[in-house]
Length: 251
Image (cartoon, rainbow, N blue to C red; front, side, top):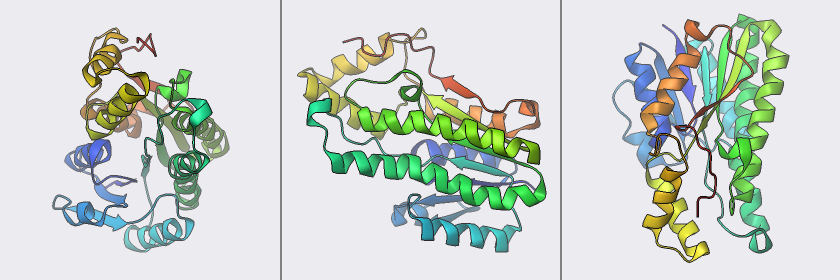
């Protein structure tokens, strides 16, 4: 039975991923900073209360995985926060550091310790959650955008380094995904622009060819494809799951 680790997997996109991998027959392990959500995980999904940006915690997690499972087939480096929403002239440095610490440092640490398990096995798949913001940028979201661009660069480098060892790496770039996080982003952007949240939400949907926001299941389905043998020659790619966004600031 194949194994998968999903960081930030106890809620939102991560939990939908976890449920999808479990339904596909994987043994699933997730991390989250919310201990209550870890305690409420569905039956059969392992959970660890770990901060993805904290190296000692991540090192201990992977040691536990190695002892329990003996290795790891798939990593979904999914941990992320939205970071501050503000004009660049008002951007707080503390918020910048916190956003990059969770989003980018967390992805690097997950890849670092997953590589140590996958290289001896000469196989493995790493899937990084980036964003369409990592493809073209988003106004008022400088730290989030910087982190998500960085994840794509990290992924491409990891794909080059680990490809000779039979390990693939790709990034999923979701568009605006329905759920509490995008609700918070929309509210903050509406306040920054002096608009009603409904107008901002409508603008996000209008800026896509399919005229709707992305669902978490859409992202989970892509992760399952990338982890599968059907994607055995897909590596080093940043794949948008966004309904074709073509206007990043429709307001």
